[in-house]
Image 1 (cartoon, rainbow, N blue to C red):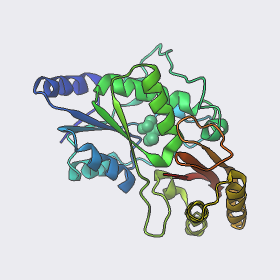
Image 2: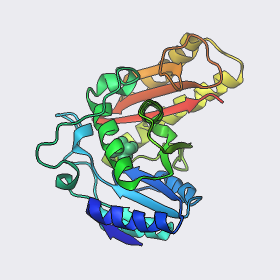
Image 3: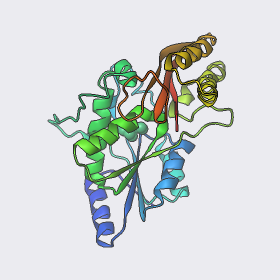
Length: 279
Ligand code: PAF
């Protein structure tokens, strides 16, 4: 496996692979990799070559968010990528991505003003801008994103369609800890008491699954049941619980296939998300 830090090095390698007729799978990450990322890398091996980017993107963090304390461990991440059969890790410094005078952005006029976008203004502008840049650098055939960040996945699918970016976007299922907590690099912020409290998210998701399984299709009924569960946990503070259409993020009164039941909850200072996509 190769590890490079510059755009030029990625381009040289990718150009060579393309000449050899190889297909390229791409997994963009912010590092501190866990089995959720691992599942994306493993899936990306359906391509001839797998590129993983590791870049904590300053543009997608708000002023009072956790950019500076976001966990980082590049050496461990590289070992992890290699063990899963990745071919290239691209871990640029911010100066390689945001060169002096940088002033071009990718912004969607819908989908991004609600759910996580409402609580984190500017977040999706940062995500879309960096993902577009990474797509232009790596030029992958397929790119892999986790369904835990369901809004991000919908936003990127929309962006790729709107801007005719020549890449197939593939969503991969949420990976959970044995006790149900969705894997996230931010779980490392939780104290042991908070870690236990955080299980309220997966409990709520399981409850939503059971209600939908029992044939309850009224969104308000499901959402208010989830509120009750989450509010019963003293360390939890709800950011949102919503039933929306998976691709457009529009509210829906009725739960049907492709409804996303999405939750965002603060456990102490840590904001966690989880969801159920109704199939
Ligand atoms: O999901 C993430 O880790 C990030 O938002 C992404 C897609 C790598 C862009 O920085």
